[in-house]
Image (cartoon, rainbow, N blue to C red):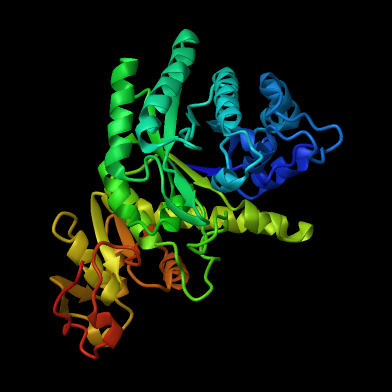
Length: 441
C-alpha cells in the first residue's frame, strides 16, 4: 500500500520546495501530480465571466488548458523530482458541485474545459510515468440519461491517448456527489453497482482487462450517508485508490481523520477499514486534509503533516491485520483478555497459537479460549522464529518487557479495535474472564 499525501492545498505553486521538504520530513514518500494545485474546483465558476478579479501573474488553466504541463512542472513537478518525492498518482481537475447554482457560469464551457484539462493532465502523467490517474466523471448539468453517453465517449478518448502513447497507466473513475438545492446527494458512480458496470463496460470497450479502475472518495460517501463497506466490497479489485478525508457529514471539506468530531464522529472509519481489509486493498491510500492544514498557523503545519502520516500508518496497520496474522508460521499470544478472545474468534481456527501468557500469576495454568495461560518465562523456551503477538493495549510496556527478557523473537502488535467481531460482554467488564458468551458481528 502506498501512503500518499495529496498535494492540492499542501504544496504552494510559488515556492513549493519547502512544502515538499516538509512532506518528506513527515515520513511521506509519495504525493500526487494533482492539477488542483493550479486549478481549483472553484476556478471553473468564473468561466464565461469577464469582470472577475484576477490574480496578477497567474496563468488560468481554465482559459489556457494547453499550458497545464508547463505550469505544473514550473509549480512543483520538477521540484518534487529533484527532491525525491515520488508522484505515482495523477488527478485531473474537477468542478465544485455548487457551481450548478451559479447563473453566470457557462456549464457547457465548463464541461468542455474539464475534458481538455483531463487530456492534458493524462499526457503529463504518462510523461512522468505515473501508475494511475484519477479522472472524475463529467456530471455538471447532465441528466441521468446523458451521463453514460457523455462519459463513455470521454473516457474512450482518454484510453486512446494512453494507447497511442504505449502507456499502461490506469484511468480511475471516482464516486461523485450532486448538489440539490444546497444538499449533497449521490451522484455518478456513488452506488457500487453503477461503478462496477461502468468500469467493466469501459474496459470491454478498451479491449483491456484493467485500463480502467476506481478511486473511492470516503468524504463523498460520508456526505451521502452511505455504508462505506457496502460500496467497497462489491467493487473489489477494481479499487485502485482511496481518498481519505474527514468531514461533518454536511459540509464538503478535507479534514484530518478523527478531527471532525463535533457531537460525534460522522465518518465511519470502522466500515472503511473492514471493507478495505476484506478486499485485501493494496493500492494508493491518499490522505486529503487540505482544510485542516490550510487553517493551521504556518509554524504548526509541519506537525500536521507528521500527524497525518502517523494516522495513515495507523490505518494501514488495521487494514493489514489479516496479513499481519498470516506473516509468521508459528505464534504465541501475550494477553488473556478481550483482545485474546477476539483473536481466537477471528483467527484462532486457522492460525492457532501455541499458548498465551499473562503477567497475572493468579491465572497461570488456566484454560482460556482453548489456550493455556503461561508465565512470560515460558517464552524463553520458544524457537526464535516463533512470533509473539501482543494482545493488550499496553503495547509499548510489554514490548519493552520482552526485550528486557532478552528475547529475539519477532514481536507483533495485534488489535481488535476494527475486527469483524465485537464482544458486548466487554462493556460490562465481567469479573469472570470466561463469562463472555460470544460475539456479535
